[in-house]
Image 1 (spheres, rainbow, N blue to C red):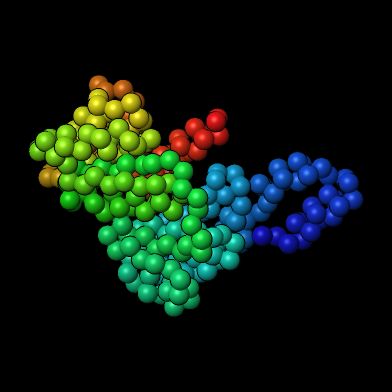
Image 2 (image 1 turned 45 degrees about the vertical axis):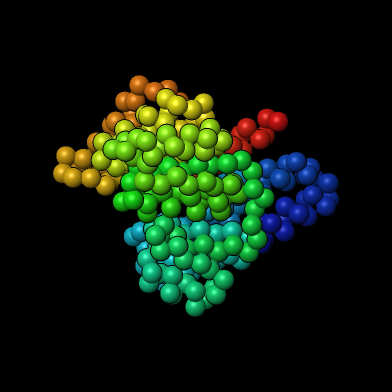
Length: 252
């Protein structure tokens, strides 16, 4: 945060040269904090509803730690996705409160939990899809939503899904994580009224083309009401689910 610009803005409000509403709008666009290798956006939560999330892939251990240290000074909840155990070990030395979810590959700092609104159901076709499913579930929880899980209910044993019919109809948004051919998203979308977010995963043999086959299956689904995010993007699915729920809450 640029303290000089913030002080100038507050002085204008105090002097009556700027209205409170105008100041609130300006606060949404205040400059980032420049760390040299990263420009940390402290006011993203004002614009989007949640703080900047660190995508760790491609970053060094030290870069992740420094960005995390910077963000926790300004936000009650901070997430770092695609984090390695080494990144966690370095970060926890500086921020003892952080928690590491090994399966979901997420580092989480949570000073206080957000009030829970709405229910997101995360469904995985197979156990091999769990890293992506857990990324979605942990993110949805951190964004302030109740999260239910229904794992390993793929179309190879459809009776496992049908045994959980009630859970499918309780959720406001359903995230379906599937590799191989990715048919599960279409099946569920044909059974429920809630919006379904398909997450194709890179799980599968050669002709699945690292997730391209399930991606195309989901995009070409004959069932209506499916939105599809990128391959292995559990975080993106949770962010979209959160936006859907919050949009509905805002209209009440």
